[in-house]
Amino acid sequence: MGGDFSIDQKRYLEGFVSGAKAVQVTRGAVPPAAPATAEPTGPDAASLKAMARFEAEGRKLSPEEKGKREELGLDSYDRMRAAAGAGAFPKGPDVFRWKFHGLFHVAPAQDSFMCRLRIPGGILTHWQFRGVADIAEAHGGGYSDVTTRANLQIREIPATDGIAVLEKLVDLGLTAKGSGADNIRNVTGTPTAGIDPRELLDTRPLAKAWHHYILNSRDMYGLPRKFNVAFDGAGVIGALEDTNDIGFQAVEIVDGYGVAPGVWLRLALGGITGHKDFARDTGVIVGPDEATAVAAAIVRVFIDTGDRTDRKKARLKYVLDSMGFDGFLALVEKKLGRALTRVPAEAALPRAEPDRLAHLGVHPQKQAGLNYIGVGLPVGRMSVAHMRGLADIAARLGDGDIRLTVWQNLLVSGIPDAHVEEARAAIVALGLSCEATPLQAGIVACTGSRGCRFAGADTKGTARAILEHCAGRVEPDGPVNIHVTGCHNSCAQHYIGDIGLIGARVAINDDGDTVDGYHLLVGGGFGAEAAIARELYRDVKAEDAPALVERLMKTWLSHRAPGEGFAAFTRRIEPDALKALADAA
Image (cartoon, rainbow, N blue to C red):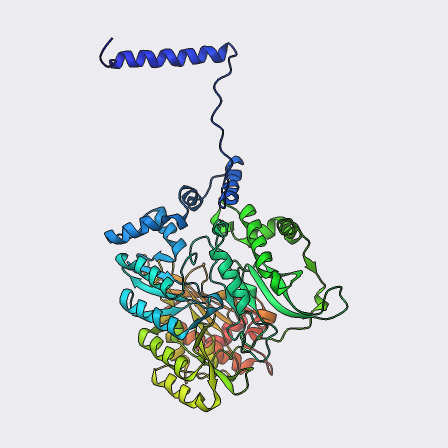
Protein backbone atom coordinates (compact mmCIF):
# COMPACT_ATOMS: atom_id res chain seq x y z
CA MET A 1 0.00 0.00 0.00
CA GLY A 2 1.58 3.25 -1.12
CA GLY A 3 1.50 6.67 0.46
CA ASP A 4 1.96 7.93 4.04
CA PHE A 5 -0.31 6.92 6.92
CA SER A 6 -3.12 9.31 7.75
CA ILE A 7 -3.17 10.95 11.22
CA ASP A 8 -5.95 8.59 12.34
CA GLN A 9 -4.02 5.54 11.12
CA LYS A 10 -0.88 6.70 12.99
CA ARG A 11 -2.80 7.15 16.21
CA TYR A 12 -4.38 3.68 15.83
CA LEU A 13 -0.98 2.04 15.35
CA GLU A 14 0.54 3.93 18.31
CA GLY A 15 -2.34 2.82 20.51
CA PHE A 16 -2.06 -0.76 19.31
CA VAL A 17 1.68 -0.91 20.09
CA SER A 18 1.17 0.64 23.55
CA GLY A 19 -1.62 -1.82 24.32
CA ALA A 20 0.51 -4.76 23.22
CA LYS A 21 3.33 -3.68 25.53
CA ALA A 22 0.90 -3.32 28.43
CA VAL A 23 -0.45 -6.85 27.84
CA GLN A 24 3.12 -8.21 27.81
CA VAL A 25 3.81 -6.63 31.20
CA THR A 26 0.48 -7.88 32.61
CA ARG A 27 1.23 -11.46 31.50
CA GLY A 28 4.63 -11.35 33.22
CA ALA A 29 6.76 -10.69 30.18
CA VAL A 30 9.97 -8.83 31.00
CA PRO A 31 10.05 -5.38 29.39
CA PRO A 32 13.18 -4.41 27.48
CA ALA A 33 15.91 -3.30 29.85
CA ALA A 34 16.85 0.37 29.88
CA PRO A 35 20.21 0.97 28.29
CA ALA A 36 22.96 0.74 30.89
CA THR A 37 24.75 3.96 31.77
CA ALA A 38 28.39 3.67 30.88
CA GLU A 39 30.81 3.90 33.77
CA PRO A 40 32.72 7.20 33.44
CA THR A 41 36.36 6.78 32.48
CA GLY A 42 39.27 9.07 31.89
CA PRO A 43 40.43 12.15 33.81
CA ASP A 44 36.90 13.52 34.28
CA ALA A 45 35.60 10.27 35.80
CA ALA A 46 35.94 11.24 39.47
CA SER A 47 33.95 14.46 39.13
CA LEU A 48 31.28 12.80 36.98
CA LYS A 49 30.90 9.98 39.50
CA ALA A 50 30.56 12.52 42.30
CA MET A 51 27.79 14.30 40.40
CA ALA A 52 26.00 11.01 39.78
CA ARG A 53 26.23 10.05 43.44
CA PHE A 54 24.46 13.22 44.56
CA GLU A 55 21.73 12.66 41.97
CA ALA A 56 21.32 9.05 43.10
CA GLU A 57 20.70 10.43 46.59
CA GLY A 58 17.84 12.49 45.18
CA ARG A 59 19.70 15.80 45.39
CA LYS A 60 19.68 18.41 42.64
CA LEU A 61 22.99 19.46 41.13
CA SER A 62 23.80 23.16 41.07
CA PRO A 63 23.56 24.84 37.66
CA GLU A 64 27.34 25.11 37.53
CA GLU A 65 27.72 21.36 38.00
CA LYS A 66 25.22 20.67 35.23
CA GLY A 67 27.08 23.08 32.99
CA LYS A 68 30.41 21.37 33.68
CA ARG A 69 28.93 17.98 32.88
CA GLU A 70 27.52 19.23 29.58
CA GLU A 71 30.83 20.83 28.60
CA LEU A 72 33.80 21.44 30.83
CA GLY A 73 35.16 24.93 30.36
CA LEU A 74 38.53 23.58 29.22
CA ASP A 75 36.78 22.25 26.11
CA SER A 76 35.18 25.57 25.12
CA TYR A 77 38.14 27.19 23.38
CA ASP A 78 36.92 26.75 19.81
CA ARG A 79 33.57 28.32 20.71
CA MET A 80 35.38 31.12 22.57
CA ARG A 81 37.39 31.86 19.46
CA ALA A 82 34.23 31.92 17.32
CA ALA A 83 32.55 34.28 19.80
CA ALA A 84 35.55 36.60 19.71
CA GLY A 85 35.35 36.64 15.91
CA ALA A 86 31.70 37.64 16.18
CA GLY A 87 32.42 40.22 18.88
CA ALA A 88 30.07 38.44 21.29
CA PHE A 89 30.33 38.07 25.04
CA PRO A 90 29.31 34.72 26.58
CA LYS A 91 25.78 34.10 27.82
CA GLY A 92 24.22 31.60 30.21
CA PRO A 93 26.51 28.75 31.30
CA ASP A 94 29.22 30.02 28.97
CA VAL A 95 29.89 32.95 31.31
CA PHE A 96 31.06 30.34 33.81
CA ARG A 97 32.88 28.20 31.23
CA TRP A 98 34.96 31.09 29.89
CA LYS A 99 36.35 31.58 33.42
CA PHE A 100 38.20 28.25 33.08
CA HIS A 101 40.44 30.15 30.67
CA GLY A 102 40.72 33.21 32.92
CA LEU A 103 38.21 35.42 31.12
CA PHE A 104 35.51 37.00 33.27
CA HIS A 105 32.62 38.90 31.70
CA VAL A 106 32.13 41.49 34.44
CA ALA A 107 28.93 43.17 33.22
CA PRO A 108 27.05 45.17 34.35
CA ALA A 109 29.91 46.79 36.30
CA GLN A 110 31.94 46.89 33.06
CA ASP A 111 30.69 45.52 29.74
CA SER A 112 34.03 43.88 29.10
CA PHE A 113 36.28 41.01 30.08
CA MET A 114 38.67 40.91 32.99
CA CYS A 115 41.57 38.50 32.56
CA ARG A 116 43.18 37.04 35.67
CA LEU A 117 46.65 35.53 35.23
CA ARG A 118 48.48 32.64 36.89
CA ILE A 119 51.89 33.63 38.30
CA PRO A 120 53.24 30.93 40.66
CA GLY A 121 54.63 32.53 43.79
CA GLY A 122 53.82 35.94 42.30
CA ILE A 123 57.27 36.22 40.67
CA LEU A 124 57.79 37.21 37.03
CA THR A 125 60.57 38.71 34.96
CA HIS A 126 60.89 42.34 33.95
CA TRP A 127 60.21 41.45 30.32
CA GLN A 128 57.08 39.48 31.24
CA PHE A 129 55.91 42.43 33.34
CA ARG A 130 56.51 44.79 30.44
CA GLY A 131 54.74 42.34 28.13
CA VAL A 132 51.65 42.39 30.35
CA ALA A 133 51.74 46.20 30.17
CA ASP A 134 51.81 45.98 26.37
CA ILE A 135 48.81 43.64 26.40
CA ALA A 136 46.89 45.90 28.82
CA GLU A 137 47.55 48.88 26.54
CA ALA A 138 46.67 47.11 23.29
CA HIS A 139 43.64 45.17 24.49
CA GLY A 140 42.57 46.53 27.89
CA GLY A 141 42.09 49.71 29.87
CA GLY A 142 45.76 50.67 30.02
CA TYR A 143 46.33 49.47 33.58
CA SER A 144 46.55 46.32 35.67
CA ASP A 145 45.65 45.41 39.25
CA VAL A 146 47.74 43.43 41.72
CA THR A 147 45.43 41.03 43.56
CA THR A 148 45.40 39.58 47.06
CA ARG A 149 46.76 36.33 45.59
CA ALA A 150 49.96 38.03 44.38
CA ASN A 151 48.60 38.01 40.85
CA LEU A 152 47.72 40.42 38.04
CA GLN A 153 44.41 41.29 36.40
CA ILE A 154 43.90 43.06 33.08
CA ARG A 155 40.56 44.84 32.71
CA GLU A 156 38.32 46.50 30.10
CA ILE A 157 39.01 43.89 27.42
CA PRO A 158 36.47 44.02 24.56
CA ALA A 159 34.67 40.89 23.38
CA THR A 160 36.83 40.73 20.25
CA ASP A 161 40.12 40.71 22.18
CA GLY A 162 39.81 38.03 24.85
CA ILE A 163 41.48 35.30 22.81
CA ALA A 164 44.27 37.66 21.75
CA VAL A 165 45.02 38.40 25.41
CA LEU A 166 45.14 34.70 26.31
CA GLU A 167 47.43 33.80 23.43
CA LYS A 168 49.78 36.74 23.95
CA LEU A 169 50.14 35.71 27.60
CA VAL A 170 51.25 32.25 26.47
CA ASP A 171 53.76 33.91 24.15
CA LEU A 172 55.22 35.56 27.28
CA GLY A 173 55.49 32.25 29.11
CA LEU A 174 52.43 33.11 31.24
CA THR A 175 48.91 31.72 31.31
CA ALA A 176 45.44 32.42 32.68
CA LYS A 177 44.15 28.83 32.54
CA GLY A 178 42.20 27.79 35.62
CA SER A 179 42.43 31.21 37.27
CA GLY A 180 38.66 31.38 37.67
CA ALA A 181 35.58 29.19 38.13
CA ASP A 182 35.83 25.96 40.18
CA ASN A 183 39.56 25.57 39.90
CA ILE A 184 42.78 25.76 41.89
CA ARG A 185 43.59 29.44 41.90
CA ASN A 186 46.97 31.15 41.61
CA VAL A 187 49.59 29.42 43.76
CA THR A 188 51.03 31.82 46.32
CA GLY A 189 54.34 31.71 48.13
CA THR A 190 56.70 33.84 50.17
CA PRO A 191 57.43 36.92 48.01
CA THR A 192 61.03 37.12 49.29
CA ALA A 193 61.68 33.44 48.50
CA GLY A 194 65.34 32.82 47.78
CA ILE A 195 66.48 36.25 48.94
CA ASP A 196 65.15 36.30 52.53
CA PRO A 197 67.79 36.34 55.27
CA ARG A 198 65.63 34.44 57.72
CA GLU A 199 63.63 32.05 55.53
CA LEU A 200 63.67 28.35 56.34
CA LEU A 201 62.78 27.30 52.82
CA ASP A 202 62.83 28.77 49.32
CA THR A 203 59.23 28.26 48.19
CA ARG A 204 59.79 29.10 44.51
CA PRO A 205 60.40 25.52 43.29
CA LEU A 206 57.44 24.25 45.33
CA ALA A 207 55.04 26.84 43.93
CA LYS A 208 56.26 26.19 40.38
CA ALA A 209 56.03 22.41 40.73
CA TRP A 210 52.44 22.61 41.96
CA HIS A 211 51.56 25.19 39.28
CA HIS A 212 52.81 22.94 36.47
CA TYR A 213 51.18 19.86 37.97
CA ILE A 214 47.82 21.62 37.91
CA LEU A 215 48.26 22.80 34.34
CA ASN A 216 49.14 19.29 33.14
CA SER A 217 46.60 17.22 35.12
CA ARG A 218 43.14 17.34 33.59
CA ASP A 219 41.43 15.90 36.68
CA MET A 220 42.62 18.92 38.72
CA TYR A 221 39.86 20.86 36.91
CA GLY A 222 37.02 18.69 38.24
CA LEU A 223 36.54 20.44 41.59
CA PRO A 224 33.15 21.25 43.12
CA ARG A 225 34.34 24.76 44.04
CA LYS A 226 37.43 26.98 43.95
CA PHE A 227 40.53 25.99 45.90
CA ASN A 228 43.51 27.94 47.25
CA VAL A 229 47.02 26.67 48.08
CA ALA A 230 49.91 28.65 49.59
CA PHE A 231 53.51 27.90 50.55
CA ASP A 232 55.03 29.94 53.35
CA GLY A 233 58.79 29.63 53.80
CA ALA A 234 58.84 31.44 57.18
CA GLY A 235 60.31 34.56 55.59
CA VAL A 236 59.95 38.14 56.68
CA ILE A 237 56.81 38.76 54.57
CA GLY A 238 53.90 36.43 55.22
CA ALA A 239 52.01 34.54 52.51
CA LEU A 240 48.74 34.43 54.53
CA GLU A 241 48.82 30.65 54.14
CA ASP A 242 46.33 30.20 56.99
CA THR A 243 43.61 31.76 54.83
CA ASN A 244 43.98 29.00 52.19
CA ASP A 245 42.34 25.60 51.72
CA ILE A 246 45.85 24.14 51.99
CA GLY A 247 48.56 26.03 53.83
CA PHE A 248 52.08 24.61 53.77
CA GLN A 249 54.14 26.22 56.54
CA ALA A 250 57.91 25.75 56.69
CA VAL A 251 58.99 24.64 60.17
CA GLU A 252 62.17 23.34 61.74
CA ILE A 253 61.66 19.92 63.33
CA VAL A 254 64.02 19.06 66.16
CA ASP A 255 65.53 15.67 66.93
CA GLY A 256 63.82 13.12 69.15
CA TYR A 257 60.41 12.72 67.51
CA GLY A 258 61.00 9.74 65.22
CA VAL A 259 61.62 11.76 62.06
CA ALA A 260 64.72 13.29 60.52
CA PRO A 261 65.37 16.72 62.05
CA GLY A 262 65.41 19.66 59.67
CA VAL A 263 63.01 21.74 57.62
CA TRP A 264 59.60 20.25 56.90
CA LEU A 265 56.24 21.67 55.84
CA ARG A 266 53.48 21.68 58.41
CA LEU A 267 50.09 20.98 56.81
CA ALA A 268 47.12 23.22 57.63
CA LEU A 269 43.69 22.70 56.04
CA GLY A 270 40.36 24.42 55.59
CA GLY A 271 41.07 28.16 55.57
CA ILE A 272 38.29 30.34 54.19
CA THR A 273 38.10 33.60 56.11
CA GLY A 274 35.06 34.76 54.16
CA HIS A 275 33.30 31.94 56.02
CA LYS A 276 35.04 32.87 59.27
CA ASP A 277 37.55 30.04 59.42
CA PHE A 278 41.34 29.75 59.26
CA ALA A 279 43.30 26.75 58.08
CA ARG A 280 43.87 24.48 61.08
CA ASP A 281 46.98 22.50 61.89
CA THR A 282 46.55 18.80 61.12
CA GLY A 283 49.56 17.50 63.03
CA VAL A 284 50.93 16.30 59.69
CA ILE A 285 54.34 17.33 58.37
CA VAL A 286 55.36 16.90 54.75
CA GLY A 287 58.80 16.75 53.18
CA PRO A 288 59.25 19.52 50.61
CA ASP A 289 59.73 16.89 47.89
CA GLU A 290 56.35 15.37 48.83
CA ALA A 291 54.32 18.58 48.72
CA THR A 292 52.91 18.19 45.20
CA ALA A 293 51.86 14.57 45.74
CA VAL A 294 50.18 15.39 49.06
CA ALA A 295 48.41 18.44 47.64
CA ALA A 296 47.17 16.40 44.68
CA ALA A 297 45.81 13.67 46.97
CA ILE A 298 43.99 16.27 49.08
CA VAL A 299 42.44 17.85 46.00
CA ARG A 300 41.35 14.44 44.68
CA VAL A 301 39.62 13.59 47.95
CA PHE A 302 37.90 16.99 47.76
CA ILE A 303 36.75 16.16 44.21
CA ASP A 304 35.23 12.92 45.52
CA THR A 305 33.58 14.38 48.63
CA GLY A 306 32.81 18.08 48.05
CA ASP A 307 29.19 19.20 47.80
CA ARG A 308 27.86 19.46 44.23
CA THR A 309 24.44 20.83 45.15
CA ASP A 310 24.94 23.84 47.44
CA ARG A 311 27.52 26.37 46.25
CA LYS A 312 27.67 28.02 49.67
CA LYS A 313 28.72 24.72 51.30
CA ALA A 314 30.96 23.39 48.55
CA ARG A 315 34.33 24.47 49.92
CA LEU A 316 36.84 22.17 51.67
CA LYS A 317 35.98 23.62 55.09
CA TYR A 318 32.55 22.02 54.96
CA VAL A 319 33.93 18.60 54.02
CA LEU A 320 36.24 18.82 57.04
CA ASP A 321 33.37 19.97 59.26
CA SER A 322 31.29 17.02 58.09
CA MET A 323 33.76 14.12 58.28
CA GLY A 324 36.38 15.53 60.64
CA PHE A 325 40.08 15.93 60.00
CA ASP A 326 40.93 12.32 60.87
CA GLY A 327 38.34 10.92 58.49
CA PHE A 328 39.42 13.22 55.69
CA LEU A 329 43.12 12.50 56.17
CA ALA A 330 42.42 8.76 56.16
CA LEU A 331 41.03 9.19 52.63
CA VAL A 332 44.07 11.23 51.66
CA GLU A 333 46.33 8.42 52.87
CA LYS A 334 44.33 5.97 50.81
CA LYS A 335 44.87 8.12 47.71
CA LEU A 336 48.57 8.37 48.48
CA GLY A 337 48.93 4.69 49.23
CA ARG A 338 50.87 5.37 52.42
CA ALA A 339 50.57 6.94 55.83
CA LEU A 340 51.21 10.62 56.42
CA THR A 341 53.90 11.67 58.89
CA ARG A 342 52.61 13.08 62.16
CA VAL A 343 54.47 14.79 65.00
CA PRO A 344 53.27 16.69 68.08
CA ALA A 345 53.27 20.48 67.98
CA GLU A 346 56.29 20.69 70.29
CA ALA A 347 58.45 18.91 67.68
CA ALA A 348 58.60 22.15 65.69
CA LEU A 349 60.54 25.20 66.81
CA PRO A 350 58.43 28.39 67.03
CA ARG A 351 58.17 30.26 63.74
CA ALA A 352 59.19 33.90 63.57
CA GLU A 353 56.26 36.24 62.98
CA PRO A 354 56.10 38.18 59.70
CA ASP A 355 57.00 41.85 59.69
CA ARG A 356 53.85 43.67 58.65
CA LEU A 357 55.83 46.59 57.21
CA ALA A 358 58.50 44.58 55.35
CA HIS A 359 56.70 44.64 52.00
CA LEU A 360 57.49 48.35 51.71
CA GLY A 361 60.81 50.15 51.78
CA VAL A 362 64.46 49.07 51.42
CA HIS A 363 65.55 45.77 53.01
CA PRO A 364 68.81 43.78 52.83
CA GLN A 365 68.75 40.37 51.15
CA LYS A 366 70.57 37.24 52.24
CA GLN A 367 72.97 37.91 49.38
CA ALA A 368 75.61 40.29 50.71
CA GLY A 369 75.42 43.77 49.24
CA LEU A 370 72.00 43.28 47.63
CA ASN A 371 68.59 44.69 48.61
CA TYR A 372 64.95 44.57 47.66
CA ILE A 373 62.67 47.59 47.61
CA GLY A 374 58.98 47.24 48.38
CA VAL A 375 56.94 49.60 46.19
CA GLY A 376 53.57 50.90 47.39
CA LEU A 377 50.82 50.82 44.77
CA PRO A 378 47.60 52.77 45.38
CA VAL A 379 45.26 49.85 46.29
CA GLY A 380 47.10 47.65 43.81
CA ARG A 381 46.44 49.58 40.60
CA MET A 382 49.23 50.44 38.12
CA SER A 383 49.12 52.28 34.82
CA VAL A 384 51.09 50.81 31.93
CA ALA A 385 53.52 53.70 32.39
CA HIS A 386 54.09 52.57 35.98
CA MET A 387 54.62 49.00 34.81
CA ARG A 388 57.14 49.93 32.14
CA GLY A 389 59.00 52.20 34.52
CA LEU A 390 59.22 49.48 37.16
CA ALA A 391 60.33 46.94 34.55
CA ASP A 392 63.12 49.33 33.54
CA ILE A 393 64.24 49.74 37.16
CA ALA A 394 64.27 45.96 37.70
CA ALA A 395 66.27 45.36 34.51
CA ARG A 396 68.72 48.26 34.89
CA LEU A 397 69.29 48.36 38.66
CA GLY A 398 68.08 45.01 40.02
CA ASP A 399 68.18 41.30 39.21
CA GLY A 400 65.37 41.60 36.68
CA ASP A 401 62.60 40.10 38.83
CA ILE A 402 59.28 41.64 39.86
CA ARG A 403 57.79 40.03 42.97
CA LEU A 404 54.08 40.56 43.66
CA THR A 405 52.71 40.25 47.20
CA VAL A 406 49.34 39.40 48.73
CA TRP A 407 49.34 42.98 50.07
CA GLN A 408 48.68 44.33 46.55
CA ASN A 409 52.14 45.76 46.04
CA LEU A 410 55.42 44.53 44.57
CA LEU A 411 59.10 44.16 45.28
CA VAL A 412 62.03 44.96 43.01
CA SER A 413 64.89 42.67 44.08
CA GLY A 414 68.65 42.30 43.63
CA ILE A 415 69.54 45.99 43.89
CA PRO A 416 73.20 46.59 44.87
CA ASP A 417 73.89 48.91 47.80
CA ALA A 418 75.43 51.43 45.42
CA HIS A 419 72.22 51.68 43.37
CA VAL A 420 69.60 51.82 46.16
CA GLU A 421 69.23 55.60 46.16
CA GLU A 422 69.07 55.73 42.37
CA ALA A 423 66.34 53.06 42.38
CA ARG A 424 64.44 54.83 45.13
CA ALA A 425 64.56 58.12 43.21
CA ALA A 426 63.37 56.38 40.03
CA ILE A 427 60.39 54.88 41.88
CA VAL A 428 59.42 58.27 43.30
CA ALA A 429 59.78 59.81 39.83
CA LEU A 430 57.09 57.39 38.63
CA GLY A 431 54.71 58.87 41.20
CA LEU A 432 54.95 55.83 43.46
CA SER A 433 56.19 55.45 47.02
CA CYS A 434 58.55 53.07 48.77
CA GLU A 435 58.06 54.45 52.29
CA ALA A 436 57.04 51.87 54.89
CA THR A 437 54.24 53.86 56.54
CA PRO A 438 51.70 51.89 58.63
CA LEU A 439 48.71 53.18 56.66
CA GLN A 440 50.15 52.49 53.20
CA ALA A 441 51.41 49.08 54.30
CA GLY A 442 48.06 47.95 55.64
CA ILE A 443 45.48 49.13 53.11
CA VAL A 444 43.90 46.41 50.93
CA ALA A 445 40.90 46.73 48.62
CA CYS A 446 39.14 44.43 46.17
CA THR A 447 37.95 45.57 42.74
CA GLY A 448 34.70 47.02 44.08
CA SER A 449 31.58 48.08 42.25
CA ARG A 450 33.47 49.81 39.44
CA GLY A 451 34.62 46.43 38.19
CA CYS A 452 32.58 43.72 39.93
CA ARG A 453 28.83 43.13 39.82
CA PHE A 454 28.73 41.63 43.31
CA ALA A 455 30.21 44.61 45.14
CA GLY A 456 28.01 46.97 47.14
CA ALA A 457 30.45 49.90 47.03
CA ASP A 458 33.43 51.44 45.26
CA THR A 459 36.02 49.84 47.53
CA LYS A 460 39.15 51.15 45.82
CA GLY A 461 37.74 54.68 45.89
CA THR A 462 36.93 54.35 49.58
CA ALA A 463 40.36 52.91 50.40
CA ARG A 464 42.05 55.83 48.64
CA ALA A 465 39.80 58.27 50.49
CA ILE A 466 40.75 56.69 53.82
CA LEU A 467 44.46 57.06 53.03
CA GLU A 468 44.11 60.65 51.90
CA HIS A 469 41.91 61.66 54.84
CA CYS A 470 43.99 60.02 57.57
CA ALA A 471 47.37 61.18 56.26
CA GLY A 472 48.43 64.07 58.49
CA ARG A 473 45.44 63.66 60.80
CA VAL A 474 46.52 60.50 62.58
CA GLU A 475 49.93 58.87 62.74
CA PRO A 476 49.81 55.28 63.99
CA ASP A 477 53.14 54.09 65.36
CA GLY A 478 52.42 50.46 64.55
CA PRO A 479 50.80 48.52 61.72
CA VAL A 480 47.05 48.84 61.18
CA ASN A 481 45.59 46.67 58.44
CA ILE A 482 42.48 48.14 56.78
CA HIS A 483 40.74 45.69 54.44
CA VAL A 484 37.96 47.08 52.23
CA THR A 485 35.91 44.42 50.48
CA GLY A 486 32.82 44.75 48.34
CA CYS A 487 30.76 41.69 49.20
CA HIS A 488 30.63 38.46 51.18
CA ASN A 489 33.00 36.75 48.75
CA SER A 490 35.58 38.71 50.78
CA CYS A 491 38.28 39.02 48.13
CA ALA A 492 39.94 41.65 50.34
CA GLN A 493 39.49 39.44 53.43
CA HIS A 494 37.71 41.96 55.64
CA TYR A 495 37.46 39.50 58.52
CA ILE A 496 41.24 39.47 59.11
CA GLY A 497 41.81 43.23 59.10
CA ASP A 498 42.43 45.31 62.20
CA ILE A 499 39.65 47.29 60.57
CA GLY A 500 37.48 45.55 57.99
CA LEU A 501 34.82 47.15 55.83
CA ILE A 502 32.32 45.17 53.75
CA GLY A 503 30.24 46.90 51.11
CA ALA A 504 26.53 47.50 51.71
CA ARG A 505 23.83 49.62 50.16
CA VAL A 506 22.79 52.22 52.73
CA ALA A 507 19.28 53.65 52.61
CA ILE A 508 19.04 57.46 52.57
CA ASN A 509 15.25 57.86 52.51
CA ASP A 510 12.00 55.92 52.71
CA ASP A 511 11.71 55.67 48.91
CA GLY A 512 14.31 52.93 48.60
CA ASP A 513 17.17 55.13 47.43
CA THR A 514 20.60 53.93 48.53
CA VAL A 515 24.23 55.03 48.43
CA ASP A 516 27.55 53.22 48.76
CA GLY A 517 28.25 52.19 52.31
CA TYR A 518 29.78 49.62 54.60
CA HIS A 519 29.45 47.54 57.71
CA LEU A 520 32.61 48.08 59.74
CA LEU A 521 34.37 45.38 61.76
CA VAL A 522 37.37 45.47 64.10
CA GLY A 523 39.82 43.10 65.75
CA GLY A 524 40.77 40.69 62.97
CA GLY A 525 44.20 39.16 62.59
CA PHE A 526 46.28 36.42 60.97
CA GLY A 527 49.24 34.19 61.78
CA ALA A 528 49.88 33.95 65.52
CA GLU A 529 47.28 36.71 66.01
CA ALA A 530 44.63 34.97 63.89
CA ALA A 531 41.13 36.15 64.76
CA ILE A 532 37.87 36.90 62.99
CA ALA A 533 36.88 40.55 63.25
CA ARG A 534 33.57 41.42 64.93
CA GLU A 535 31.06 43.90 63.61
CA LEU A 536 31.08 47.30 65.30
CA TYR A 537 29.06 49.59 62.99
CA ARG A 538 26.39 48.91 60.39
CA ASP A 539 25.33 50.96 57.40
CA VAL A 540 28.10 53.57 57.40
CA LYS A 541 27.87 55.75 54.32
CA ALA A 542 31.04 55.60 52.22
CA GLU A 543 31.55 59.35 52.56
CA ASP A 544 31.60 58.95 56.36
CA ALA A 545 34.00 55.98 56.46
CA PRO A 546 37.33 57.89 56.36
CA ALA A 547 36.45 60.07 59.36
CA LEU A 548 35.20 57.03 61.29
CA VAL A 549 38.45 55.16 60.64
CA GLU A 550 40.37 58.22 61.84
CA ARG A 551 38.35 58.36 65.08
CA LEU A 552 38.88 54.66 65.74
CA MET A 553 42.64 54.98 65.35
CA LYS A 554 42.75 58.07 67.56
CA THR A 555 40.71 56.20 70.18
CA TRP A 556 43.26 53.38 70.12
CA LEU A 557 46.23 55.74 70.42
CA SER A 558 44.60 57.60 73.33
CA HIS A 559 43.30 54.68 75.39
CA ARG A 560 45.55 51.69 74.68
CA ALA A 561 47.72 49.91 77.20
CA PRO A 562 51.50 50.24 76.73
CA GLY A 563 52.54 48.37 73.59
CA GLU A 564 48.98 47.30 72.79
CA GLY A 565 48.22 46.85 69.10
CA PHE A 566 45.01 48.03 67.47
CA ALA A 567 43.44 44.59 67.16
CA ALA A 568 44.24 43.63 70.76
CA PHE A 569 42.80 46.94 71.96
CA THR A 570 39.53 46.51 70.07
CA ARG A 571 39.17 42.93 71.31
CA ARG A 572 39.63 44.06 74.90
CA ILE A 573 37.07 46.88 74.84
CA GLU A 574 33.40 45.97 74.67
CA PRO A 575 31.68 47.19 71.48
CA ASP A 576 29.37 49.73 73.12
CA ALA A 577 32.22 51.19 75.16
CA LEU A 578 34.47 51.32 72.06
CA LYS A 579 31.77 53.09 70.06
CA ALA A 580 31.28 55.61 72.84
CA LEU A 581 35.00 56.36 72.94
CA ALA A 582 35.17 56.68 69.16
CA ASP A 583 32.13 58.93 68.98
CA ALA A 584 33.78 61.23 71.50
CA ALA A 585 37.16 61.29 69.73
